[in-house]
Image 1 (cartoon, rainbow, N blue to C red):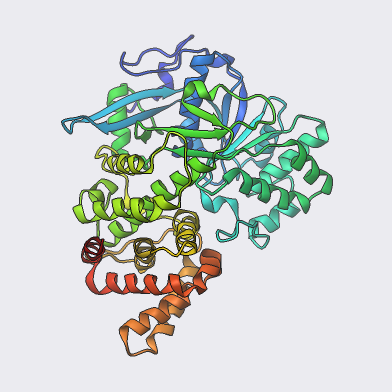
Image 2 (image 1 turned 90 degrees about the horizontal axis):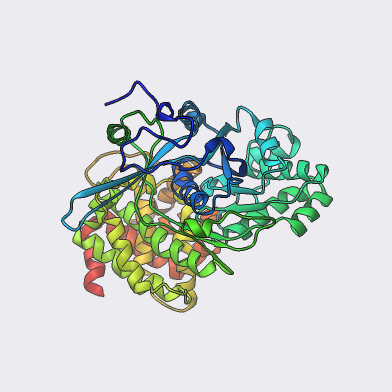
Amino acid sequence: MPTALPISSVRLTGPLDGFPSDIARPAYDRAKLEIGIVHLGIGAFARAHLAAVNEAALHASGDLRWGIAGVSLRHADTRDALVPQAGLYTLALRDAGPEGQLREALRVIGCLREVLVAAEEPGAVLERIAHVETRIVSLSITEKGYRHDPATGALRLDDPDIVRDLRAPHAPRSAIGFLVHALDRRRQRGLAPLTLLSCDNLPANGRMLRGLVLAFAARVDSKLHDWIDHDCTFPNSMVDRIVPRTTAADREQVAARLGCADAAPVIAEPFLDWVVEDRFAAERPAWDLGGARFVDDAAPFERMKLRMLNGSHSALAYLGGCAGLQTVDAVVGVAELRRFADALMRLEIAPTLSACAGLDPTRYAHRLLERFANPALRHRTHQIAMDGSQKLPQRLLDTVRDRLGAGHSIERLALAVAAWIHFLRGVDETGQAHSIDDPLREVLRENLSRARAAGSVHPDPTTATRAEVARFCAFAPVFGRLGGDARFVAPLARQLDALRRRGVLATVATLDRAG
């Protein structure tokens, strides 16, 4: 494997050269690329969708005002990998052909012009957001990065970083703190307002971000609050692309094709759908020329994606993880689990969706199962299973509420939630231990312990499980009022009891027979 030279070593005086002819690369002059976008959370997901679409738009429009400054809020690993490469990295799109042969298309992305680490240089991040040429600040910081209550969407004013950031305008730690204090600098300097664009898997992500920013700003300065409220925009958006975590083997494979080392390649599926509400405070890139869609209302697209893709993805990850299956393609390769996911989407999720132009839920579900089965991605179930306390409210519990409100069955949705609880025990059916990666891990562990104690006083196993589940679901930050609804607790207890007694495959098979 070539390791001596980084990817930037092939950069010549003009467009990039020196790669094999089948590898796409920037055809514009990177030296003339200005920074118009600041992206918070410059991990693999952002580099596989926002940067990829932006790269295509630069080529299609020739408008070089839209380079990206990427910001890592906490860790320096992405910066340390990308800066020696002059911000260049490879996007590898992988799938399988008609005969099952693995395929890969490579493109070198050049629109990332700067990478900062907020924890090390908060002043530089604030100034980049406050820079006169910045017009858009986008975010992909995962659900937990918003410092909100997942059940209500409200800003957690007791969060330690939020408390600190209200007192530390020159060195914030949270994304919300950076946004508000940088916007304050812009306002005081008489600069234009910004578009703040969330790309995370949250319901009405733009509206939620707006509420969090305004809640923080109200505690800083009422005039700042009013300026943001009146002049800045917060479009809702929906991003649909599967992006697994890059492995050492991925880096070796990409380097072998490049002929030089890339310390930070990104792996993704070829499919991409990015829907953005066309509400920008100033100019915007020609992202529609790069594959994005500008719409008046992103809600129907977002709702379908959150519930169908993310909901079924989480269900498969927890069920598969409990069964000892390591990757999503392995999970959907099990007939019982594939049928379960199909029935979950068709019978319990799709009926909660409103009409979405150009999208048929049945075809969407079929396409999702094909995407999940992509053997080239090897998307690990434990990656999807991360941060369940932050993900379940919008991925599964909102659908549960709608089903219960309509008086409909939630047995499959209950099994998906039960699988999360079962997964939290930290060991699968094969006896292998797994880690629980969740910002509320310790709280969940304590809650589980108390729930088990509540169940242990009942000699009858079924009654014990019901009492245990009722106690666990009283955890309002995740379940809200749903935790006190017997229509939810009863099927959840029933499915958790089945998982414990019969295991994953026997439990889903029982549901399959029940229709």
